[in-house]
Length: 207
Image (tube, rainbow, N blue to C red):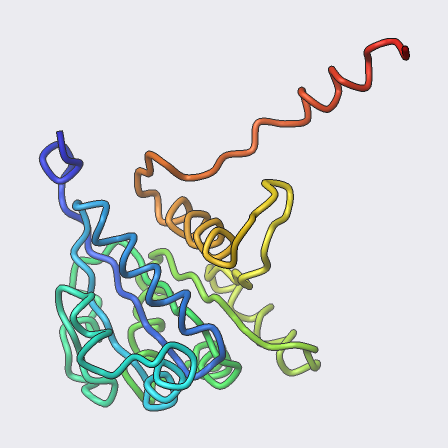
């Protein structure tokens, strides 16, 4: 039975800003659609569209086709700009340092920053997949501010303990962790089961 037939539909906002790593936003939209129990609301910044073209050869129409509802980034009167809009979470994937700063200081000057502000004021889950390195003090302080307000700073740092063989596996592992943090069900997500196998091997007597 499909998940959509057994679970109530949830609403998740996905924002793609102008940091490198547009693939995370795209893959997140794909995974949420595959779950079948999520209605996605998408907004993309101007710089985000440039990165989609540069990094993935994707145009506006292609990325918007992955979402259920699309909101222009300059439409601060959109449904997702209001706390009365019932929503289960928001992910900015990737999150630029400019967007991080706008969220940290409450500068609701576009729909991404405004929707994120709504998540914080309504005490809903906000996940920022921040992308920058190295980090300066302003970046670190902005991350602290968002964390203190209840947001989650989630840099897309790849894990290697599951021994990924491809770039796609690394991306999927990170995206699955984000989906976990949204409280959504996943059937095929890679899971860490500890070092039992390694421990058993090392415990065997030599020879």
